[in-house]
Image (cartoon, rainbow, N blue to C red; front, side, top):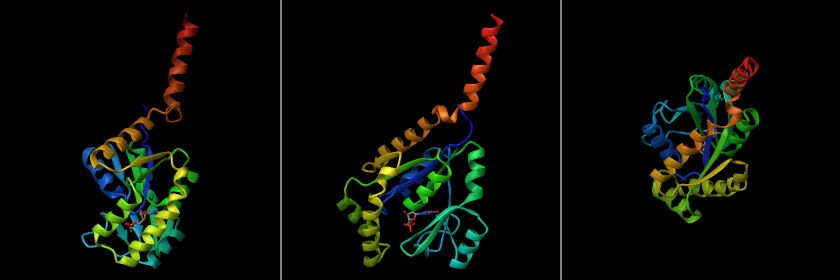
Length: 211
Ligand code: 5GP
């Protein structure tokens, strides 16, 4: 099958558990996947490390990255900038890794516009009540922030149909298996295997002509 990696965009309501799913996916298949690390102007949550969860930068630094065209896409989310650095993504795809961008919906749309062969996957909790419970339980956000994340989730729900896949995160391990299987099946698409198909056609032609 083809050597080039698949670009995968994963979105989901804040609190859907997509971060946990992606970490588990990488843990189980470290040689298959690369997880892009975004830049953001949001302040780090307790336990978050610069260069691991995000590159935490100032607004000025972020705007410089925009000016220098260093980002594949960027968006504002609940008052902060978030963006995907270009270099890592392209180098990993060239090396044959499937690269995962864990980004919100506006960014996902921009990626699909610029790179139509990207696979868009939306992760959802089983219900809205469960989403609220997870956000409250996480305990890292003030009440006002939880309210704005829930209202943002409602807005994002309007765009779910733009995604290629919709995955429910009820049981973590099951969800990880499903996401892995979806991405690996993508490698078999004819549109990702033009070179191989052309090779086989050329060989067959020479056999046919030799007969
Ligand atoms: P959080 O503050 O909870 O880490 O992330 C808030 C939202 O920003 C999440 O939906 C997350 O997926 C999204 N996000 C993270 N990085 C990026 C990025 O590089 N670009 C865009 N467009 N969204 C991002």
